[in-house]
Amino acid sequence: MTGNGPRQKVAVVGLGSIGGIAAACLAETGRHDIVGCARTPFDALTLERPGRTVTLPLRVLTDPAAASPADWVLVVTKTQDTAAAAPWLARLCTPATRVAVLQNGIDHVERVAPLANGATVVPVIVYYNGERLAADRVRMRVAGEHDLAVADDEGGRAFAALMHGTPLRVVLEPDFVTLKWRKLLLNAVANPITALTMQRQAVLRRPDIYALCLDVLAETVAVARADGATLPDDEPKLVMERLMKFAPELGTSMYFDRLAGKTFEVEALTGAVVAAGERYGIATPLNRVFLALLRAINAAPATPP
Image (tube, rainbow, N blue to C red; front, side):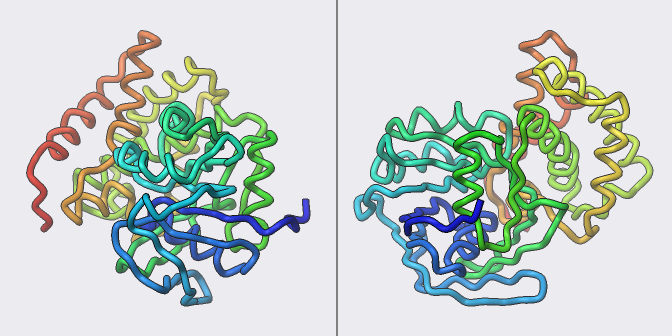
């Protein structure tokens, strides 16, 4: 795969931490025409990443009525904001469009396909860590061997070609069901605990929190296996070993959203585990505790610290 092909129009819906990084990385290559779709207008986007800071001009639309069909649409909103992206998708998508969904959770296609005007939906797993420093400034941190993962199929290979030449490393995965559950396992402990304690990932290194994580992961692995994921008996230990390799100062999406007084995507993470457990008749008591507490926070008035 060379990634050399015709110039394409790429729309990025959602210019937060993850979307801003994706848009900036694509814009930096100069290979495609990039347009951002967001609430706040700006003329240039600054990306901080290891060893390099770059400011790039970026066309940003704030009204879906100004949008026109694109070759690719990257949906990079939080999962709870997917419905709010519907007006953008209605204008950007045709049956010839490909929609890459860079969101957490395990139900990318089911969430976005009903809004996409018959476009092909490509689920994408995100591994890089992003932080939004301002409306027009984002910071990227590397958090693993790969930055993005897709299924090893026609849609996944097309997405990998789109991202060719960017700093974002894309891996093609034949067993995508297992891969998306492995990502959810990371999120099933890191996101709830950082949001509930209002601490970054250093909190996971506490012995009592580490032990709690192992128990939460054990019940989550049982659900994942019932859903078709192929996971070994020591998967909880392997997940925690991987989390310990992340820098302790890293935050999570739930942590940053709670810090900002925003609602967070509990339903796509902990809620997805509990819902799948109900489908397969598997008890998830610890995930249920997390879910109840996180829903209560989400239902409270937004009061940023």
